[in-house]
Image 1 (cartoon, rainbow, N blue to C red):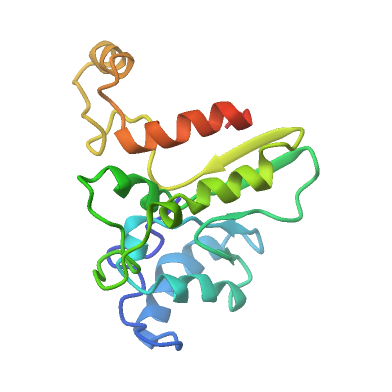
Image 2: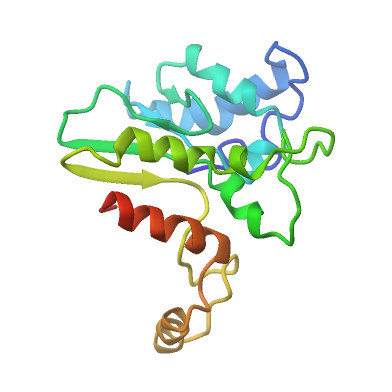
Length: 192
């Protein structure tokens, strides 16, 4: 669900080669803990902390691991039965659209490569094409939630009753996520 290598993604891999320090982080933070489950696939999504490092190296690592599956920053999981369709969204690109006109940039903080709004929304557009008209169950996932009672939304309000009341009044959500994803989910009949 994102922030796969916390705190700053693969920050030492500056070129096409995976830096030994980053490989050590992947082994310690992913391969060892999740390797105990055998050869089960772990389908990853990008988080804002992944974007602080070399996101392309995180994607490239898919070819080196038996369980790390991260073919793109947004993608449809292939090889599933035709009754289920799962799509990983890069919600970091969606969330930052609402950050007071701050442009999302390649590698998150590199201000020399600003992206257009269309590029930022390309994951949603690709998801629409990939799963919108499909029959069966449809699921999307990503790092940032639409609704939350946590500190990244508009706050946890103490008691369960207050939190639910404020969620209903639209206080417990990330505005850009709600604005972009709720209409998409209704249009495509996304169940999960």
